[in-house]
Length: 444
Image (cartoon, rainbow, N blue to C red):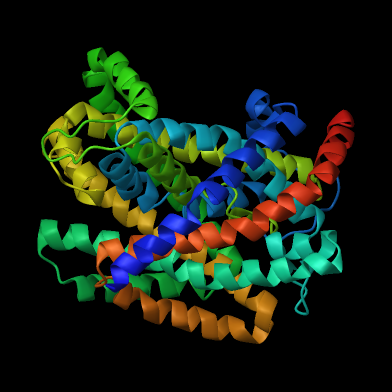
């Protein structure tokens, strides 16, 4: 059997009914358990961003920097190439399921960050560490501790796919096509730039992310909005196309091969999770380093991620792609988004995507380097950190020349495997989150 076919089969199993049901089911359960707090109190999350605790707080970076670090890892090629791939494989209906995943993912994100602050600890070097492996170890009975090591093992390896290979591969492909620069040279250049940032640890990453993420997001959003507003008369038609396609088969047309409802659900949910990482357990590793002792506050900040990443940035990509009609051309990945922007905003459009893709990918690589590093540290101790960082930098040039489909498949598989231990922990620890949230919020 061809290796890519084998990976596709494994991906289909990992992202089968069990994982998809868990992701959506846990999000729905947590939303109702929190009485829809994440959806109805978004303003509280935004206010909390710059609100300092009344007393001295633990942590290495500010709450704003922790959100930007988390967003630096989520706002990446998933917003450009991932959305395009979801439409290419699952049809316009996949976007609806991305929205649903994001909406209920807000509660998942809230609980992840809440638990990350509540159960974080200090390592032997007195640095703050946290995330799913720590809230499993410190919050659950010993019989569940194997889940912490499973998560850390999957996260340590998955980082090289979702946070490294996929990102640099998408960038090298687009730059090679548009400017004829060798993919090897692109990979080496990115590796050098990443090295300058990640060797400084979480404070360096947080500092760069807090400046890079707002700039790159606003630039991309502005370019997309210009195209959408210019075609405002098509917006109702696009909404209808997305919602209708979510519940009916999308017929083959042009270069589009057609899609079933199950394909729309599968690729919408999987690409949605790939983009905003709700339920994956990655972002709480960054939020654990925030300078706050209030879990509800940090949870409220974290729940803004799916709103910004998926409901805003991904939706803009989707509408531009659908308005252009390029999704029927047979083009896939970042090239599809580039073509759509180029058609909607001649001359400038494709450069907005290319520039955005480069910045998005770079920020994701530095954010995920920290996630993978902390997972490795949990298993092997702090001595592994320099080795992991060096390996992370070395892998980047190789990621630039791997076939895109192979990288996406590996990333998909690792996403699903990471999510399962984390989702189990969220279910088991949810009563604590519900009661403590009510208690903490009643004091504010």
